[in-house]
Length: 461
Image 1 (cartoon, helix red, strand yellow):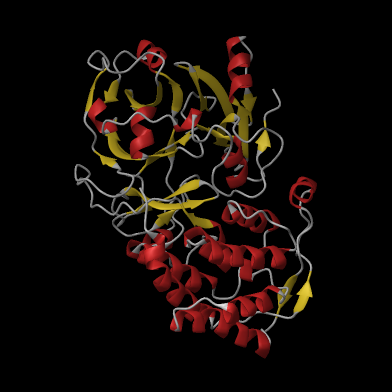
Image 2 (cartoon, rainbow, N blue to C red):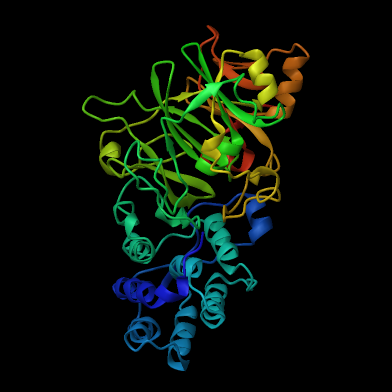
């Protein structure tokens, strides 16, 4: 799926820099407010100092020439290049957040080179010209460079000029808009239970058709599935389908569920969407087409409230105002043969939901690490190490390296951490409490878990 970025570039620039012209940047500089981990300095070097205060009159004029005049006159020439060079000499790295957002969408080598050179100078790094957006953004995230004033206004102008459906997404809330990037796909804004209609998006599935295990002849025993149990009812969600759909709204065991799968994070999660405050309708989860540190950004299509996909919190919109936080059921990542043997009564999504596609992002596209900017990654494990993650009753996040946990459990060792006990289930692992109650664990890549739970403990085995 592609968008002809060059065709809409003039509109993008016009909307962006009409907002950018109102920004105030500074001349006095101070160092970063908190020390960075040693591994960040080792990988990215020392961050630049950060300015405060107003932009000088000369720099304001440079903004007008480089951006506003360029849009008005539909021209990017020597005057604009000189003005951008002047801004690059301003020593204000906050400007690079705007450059990063532009680099994600712009086309044309001359413009990309100019923006990349300006970013390199402002960050004090000689950044490579290839994949400059990713490299630039990794530095901004790792160094925690502050956003410029009125950043959301500028970002909203850029993104909604590309996809008008995002106009209700980019609003104030408990979300760090610096970290939001485009995932290369469009928003799925189809109403509930209309997912049989095609869309130019990643197509969620509502109330998916299922079959018995015996009828699922199309599945091979070694195919990966995500198994869920609710109130004694079992269902398998084949990874082949989830890599196409990435979101399912379903009913299982008398409970309503929203099930996102982030291929980039290796994480399938199951949220109860019927346990919400009084007066709140069931959230119907959809893919926005946006990412935060390589994790899909999901939203409720009824209210356009954005959720932190990994944490289950509503972070914008009416559901954030209602403080909606979705609870989870455990998701068991295993193979079909083991799952159906352990739970022969299971149902499974039907093959037609894969839409004739057979992706394997896990072992192909994503095999060599995150393909979108994530900044720094906790070095205690490799980025794509599988972990089982859970939050304790006291609120402490804990990650268990999956391979070590399975080996320990198979040898008869007990794995306990505060109220958490791990158990084997159909070839996978789930977390329960001392009474055997499901605690809502799931599998994920280490880089994702450690970024959304930066203070996580790591089980030592």
